[in-house]
Image (cartoon, rainbow, N blue to C red; front, side):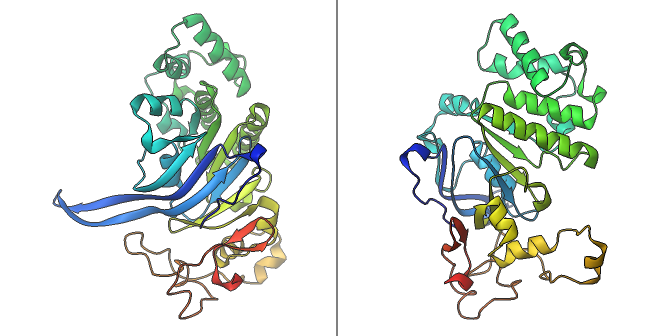
Length: 334
């Protein structure tokens, strides 16, 4: 799905992705190529400076592969990732290092993301050391300031602690602090609360949102849980089988979903109203398609209750705009 509609001059995107494909080769006996996993397969989007967006979809839809491609950890098979006028594919090692200083990363598993042999002080100084900040006093001052920002106060209580001495929520705050150390312009948070207790999730989400608003960061929040994004993101991108199938402002998408897959995601959400539990909501059967051999046409058509033979199973749907600034890749809107 393309989402590269023109923006006014004052709203030129910070990040522009054009027809991005990230495929992973499958080999037999180490040398015989037998196919590719099409983890990201034709994604186009634009992110403005200072906005918070969410990428949602089932596990295996390509969200994390897209995130790691945007971080420069995966090299695109085709297409472009352009950050503030710089094409990532054209950057050398020095250029990629400079780019990664501008893009922070918050991982899903905080304990797995933190080296167990480093204390918090060393963990947070490490990015500054790698990027050439030699003044120890400046590094320590920055560490204390960021710990206060992620609400680990007083900082002196945490500097000498190791990851195993922290709770899950405290570990994730350290991960967020590390992402902030180099004063990035964008942060990518990949399922940042899925490993945390429910009581801590709202605190971490509110913390990320307040940091994003304070520093006017571009924040890309990756999740499979639509219920967490209403009060967090400004726009939502819905992914399915390596592609973006719908995007819109958050309230419009949640209140007026246009793609059958988005409607299925919303129907699968738990409902706190006990009376509604008596009424079974239609949820498409089946599993997401193989990313090695995806179906022709619309990739959702084998599960879609509205699929039309001869159209949905033959041709890829283009972008339609059924509502203002609301885009859906579905033939129902032709």
